Image 1 (cartoon, helix red, strand yellow):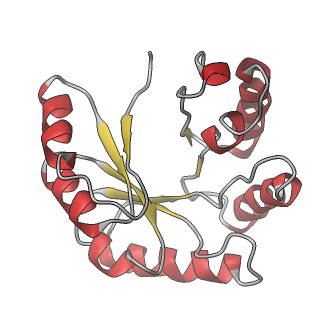
Image 2: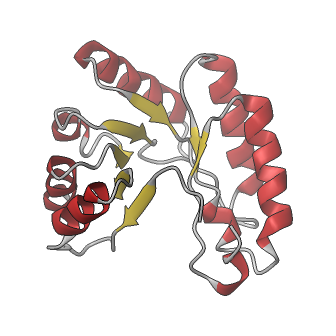
Image 3: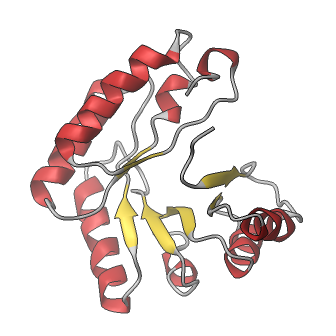
Length: 180
């Protein structure tokens, strides 16, 4: 439905044995693929099969993920923690030294669970790192807000436009997000 990259989202705490097969099949049909998992076996298999982007990377997997040859989406270990910007800075420095392509995602939170503070993180990241590629996982908000997603997406995309955030992750699994 117009996505530039198809993201294969995996189930936390489980391992999907078909990550490589599905990645390869999609790549063979001309699609660009990302893998959304912290599970090492899934991520390594998908990257070897052609996944060009790994969601997500933090201090728990940065050592091995930085060796995959794929671009990484760097997220803080604890987006609400007091050291969020220091964590991102350390990880970006490590990846830059290794020559690993990356973009950062300070993580948007659902309404009622830190939404305003998460927007402030995006603004602060842009202020600190004006030239760093960024991503916003707007699906976190649209999937968890029981409202027609078009208006929510327009507002979030306006914020992305003004902050120079060039990539978004959205989903259309839940009924009210089908047009996302």
